[in-house]
Amino acid sequence: MKKQLIAVTALLFTLGLSVQQIISNPTGTPLQASGGPAEGGATCFQAGCHFGAPSTVTDIITTDVPVAGYTPGTTYNITATVAGSGAKGLMVSAQNAGGSHLGTLISGSGSKIVFSSKYLTHTSAKTTATGIWTFKWTAPAAGSGAVTLYGAFAITQNTTRKQELTIQENTTTGVEEVNNGVAFTAYPNPVLNHLTLSLDILQSEHQTITLVSVDGKKSKLLFDGTRSSGKQEASFDVSDMENGLYLIHIISATANSYQKVLINK
Image (cartoon, rainbow, N blue to C red; front, side, top):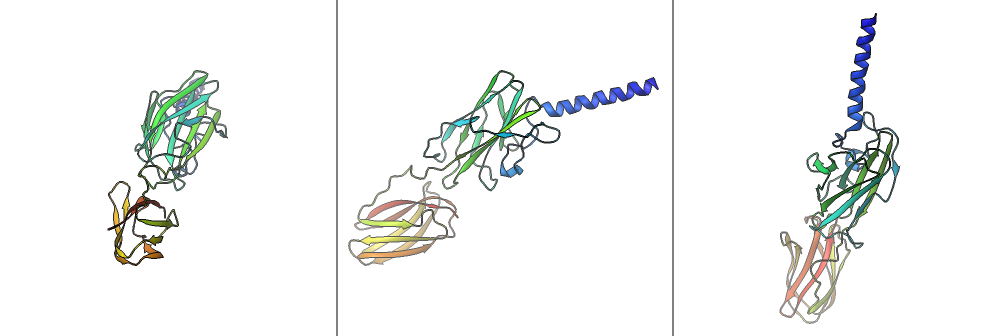
């Protein structure tokens, strides 16, 4: 009987150690659990991880992204500041509302990138009164739209936090708009499937209208022919174009005009 009791105690002790190892995860979370839509909103508050439902906060994640929004391809600094008594850890991701991971997370001191480069987590739990992680994020391509930084944070086994910080895309930066020789307005902007131009042409002449992505990799000839002078409208099907920021380029003998438009279907 005594041997059986010792055996059971040893087993329970071993199980206890295993559970403790699963719960603590001092070298980074083993789960995809930043609170984003890709993981169904899951955070570190779940079986085998941490106890205590997360409270929603707004002050843990901060960035140096301008108020106007991110510029595609630009790398920004991100800081996660977690205060509280006990060991602290985190997981962060950058997703859109549909759960697509956008941009590139770049680890810093005390953090690492995991799960196919889609998530950032700690490499060791921080035990100071305030745990601070600094890392970077490179913004996605033009036309990606709003991106949300999702963060799940643990302070000991029983206290968790979560935050969502949405960053808009700045579609006003980049190439300067030029209206030289022909005045026109593009609408709607953003565009779904059909783009309409309201034109005011000074004189009858041959004209080409081209839609070109800001990186120059995608283009579509919208019109190549003669237009009479005066105010008029022209509509074009752009449903075959990928989402992104484009330039409408109108050129003729007397005109060389550009205007930005965003396709976001």
